[in-house]
Image 1 (cartoon, helix red, strand yellow):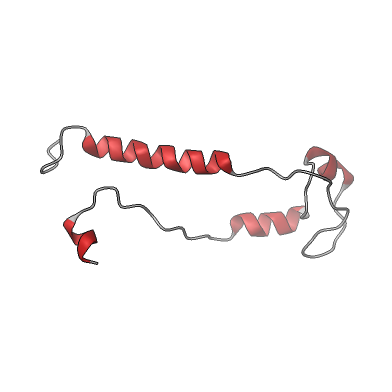
Image 2: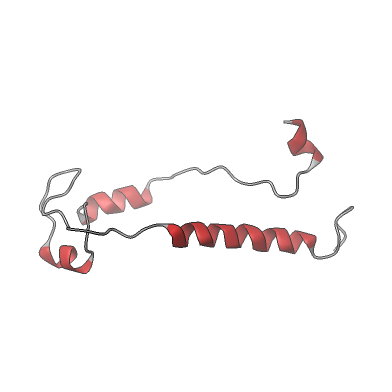
Length: 89
């Protein structure tokens, strides 16, 4: 595929690099550690004992964790191409 001044395969290399960066970011996230709370840090409902045993260091009940996981978090993207349009902004 022709990409202007870019060499063949450069676009795919950019896509692969973006995917690898995102995977590395996700792997770097730390899992909860330490002692689990007996009550949720947000709503103060009791956290079931089975959840506390399954996830050492858990701080939230299932409902609060689901709410947190489902909330949208926008992240800034990386423009690897350095196109002329991106340089003008």
